Length: 155
Image (tube, rainbow, N blue to C red; front, side, top):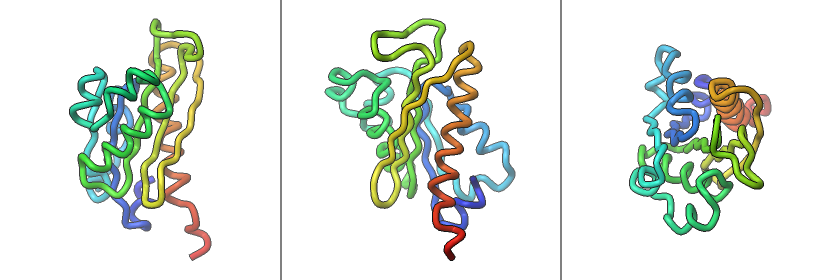
């Protein structure tokens, strides 16, 4: 992921909710990650999403925190908050409670704000709380890698 970001000359800002900083931890496990990781914020509470990532309160009210709309706003907000080229956001329900109709346990929304637009994806993971969080962090990094490495073979 880091090498692909460096080849693109991209920096990333993170907005995490259900992963609780795990994506940040995995990126910073790599020496030299400060060359591409500007920073990350864990916005577990709605107020934190609003204050730190500029998520609209109306979006949370209308769509819920585990939604395509809120994930996209978190990603855009993360890029802006850190002055990064790319914003990566993760919001979901890791359990053991919190499921609702249409949003079962393990539902996670991902968004990647980048030059040219915002990519949004949803996935559902099984297992206990830690398994969902680990799966979501891995998915987020694979999404970032996929986008950052796109077109590299064409150069």
